[in-house]
Length: 571
Ligand code: PEP
Ligand code: MG
Image (cartoon, rainbow, N blue to C red):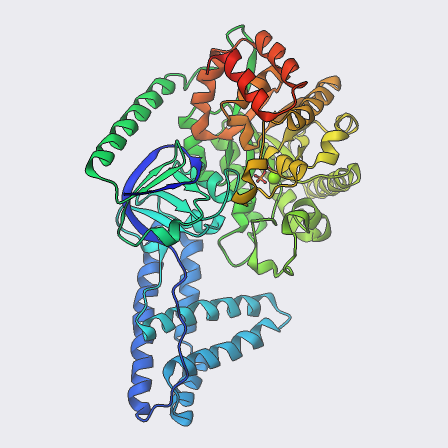
């Protein structure tokens, strides 16, 4: 049995066969062929196999993932049936006596270059389609297996170098029992998605794709961050027992589903959920969420090949607001960039994407994208208790500019006779140190703060949240981070505003006592963490935690803080 230590990214235990999601080797050499008829036949056979495969994927996607995802594969099928692509490949095989692989690649590359150079979004997207189908046909010519995560039809554990958020969104929860990756940290977006999908996950193992082969039996221990490869029957038995205990514990927490969140000395806080799509609402309700503290709207824009329309967005926001039945819903405007890419925006590659043209910076520049989203939100506002928040605000000027655009869109809608709610609170994410430091000034102009510790820690410690080699610097309990958090909470309260936190720290067992002591009003976390957090808070005294928080702010190291929390809470 081999063992890998990684970072625990999503709770629970999964035991299943490995399914490697790795790019296949599609390299080949140019060859001269004598029998070009036979070679053209080989090309056609590969083409037919690709079409069959794509039809199956499309049908499965239609059922499991919905019409918009299925449309991507429909577009691929159209490309494969297009004589403008197919005929030149055949001609090349016959006129140049070359192998099908070479003829296919040369022809496809020529079209890709041509489409990519066009100043037309639609044609640029076609280049991406051609690139994709070329890989599929090549794989059949070469006889190598190409992975199709949406076709998984048995229980598996996904093994990948990394999973992009859109890969993660395509995984079928019924079959994907867990996943493990070589890279990533607890706050990388694949880890966050795994928590919202309730799939046990271990990230940052460094070598999972090397050490694990397709079909190996794998245990993913998302509680401890361990991966066991081909475990002994005894180990499997032991893990089944651990899993049973974990399930029993969850059943205990589940009794709190309809309760309020109150400390042992009667202080009430709000426990809300972070969601990525309207589908996540079920988990919020089942786990007793008192609201949505962060709706990451960027997932609406991802895993597709064009912008969502105002109408599509309106429907999604309305569904979430209605689903929460008047409870607060904090919707964050588009936060694209960093590890969340939108290929169809065709933005130039940046050296430091986490420090680059992202989130509100992009929205203030590409205003039509921003205005469409704001209009959809304003129109949906009458269906529930909407609060809007802007991501990655670094200066008051950015906040004011974004607010001015929102006000303009409100005025336009109202003059068109559209109804818009009168009471939409407007807040910001505090995830950039400059904003935390200047929180007292921001508090005069915003309605609320939501502290985004995933980024706030990364920017304060200058440690990439995706990079497992610097994960030791990712220290939520560092007195430096706690002081920033305190500044933000105090600044909000001084102006009679509320402060929440939607970074992963808000659901962290060691951080919760400190955040309660610091006076945090709203804790927003993965839905699956809510009941555990509610149970924990019910056993903590607010007054005692205030004392603890005061002490740790004057400590020097993270370790001292952790020890003090353990001592005070008997963890
Ligand atoms: C954060 O930065 O803490 C946050 C909640 O936003 P995201 O994880 O989407 O960057
Ligand atoms: Mg962030």
